[in-house]
Each structure stands twice: as structure tokens, then as C-alpha cells.
Image (cartoon, rainbow, N blue to C red):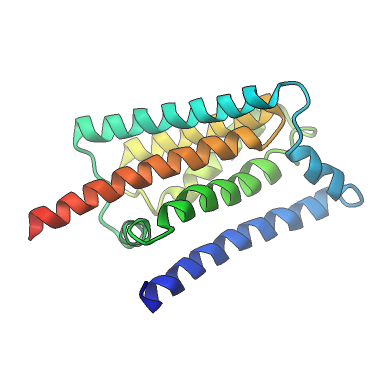
Length: 203
């Protein structure tokens, strides 16, 4: 692997680390004195069986990924040609790239957006409002990546709401992490395949 590729992967994982640190800081601030029990609760399954929660996560990830990739293929929609897309295409071609996009982003983003930004406020505000605002924020932060593609903005909004609902419904981060990681991995694989085809056709 090239040195520049290693540096890029390291930078991406640093970004994931910053998300986790940001989430922990929020948890310490809003759950001072009970941060550890709150953290443990995020990964505890109380009302459902472990297999059911895993199944919900897997099914959600598969459905989201298959619907989105299906629409992309049928409509011929491609991701915007911008710096973020080029970086993503570069990452998924690296050894360990799909793991980075899938597990890395899946865990870090869920820990921050659902674990902290949903979990910390469900006791204070109506659940529907927390879930909706969380989905809007999730979409807003992805706008630069998908600028000019309304379908992708809508997809991220719906996906953000569903992932937040999974956390709310199961009471655990396990289902949304699995769903997000599986979705990212499948879309990453699809992007790698279409990117490789474009390179072959351009030669």
C-alpha cells in the first residue's frame, strides 16, 4: 500500500476517533456522575432477544442498501463528481477500505448521532422531535458529499430517521450500528464495482 494511502486511512480513522471523543464529551457533560451506566446502557439489550435485535439490524441494512442501489442502477444516478466522492472511491479500492467505510463509519457515526445526540435527549424532549431533528442534522452534514443529488439527500434523511428509530425501538446501539455498517459496506462495494467499470471504459 502506498504511503499516501496509509496516511489517508489514518486520517479517516482519526476522524472517527474525533466523533467518538465528541460523543463521550457530550455524555460526560449531560450525564455527569452517571456517564458509565449510560454508556453501558447503550449496548445493553433489555426487552428483546439478542438474535432479534441482530436480525432487525441486518434486515434494515439489507433493505436500505438494496433499495438505494436498485434505484441508482435503474435510474443511472451516480454520486456527484467532487473531492469527497473521489476520496471515497480511493478508500474503497484500498485493502481494508470497505472495513473502514462499513464498520468504522457505521460505529463512529452511530455512537455520536444516535448514542449521544438521540440517547441524551430522549428523556427531555418528545421522541418524535428528537428523531426528526437528528435525521435532519444527519442529512445536513452529508449535504456537501451529495450536493446536487436530491435523491441522496432524501435517502440520508430517511435513513437517519430509521436508524434513530431503531435505537429508540430496541434501546440499544447494536441494531443501528449493524444496519449502518451493512448499508455502507454494500454501497461501498457497489461504488467500487461501478468505479472500476468506468475506469475500464475510459481506457
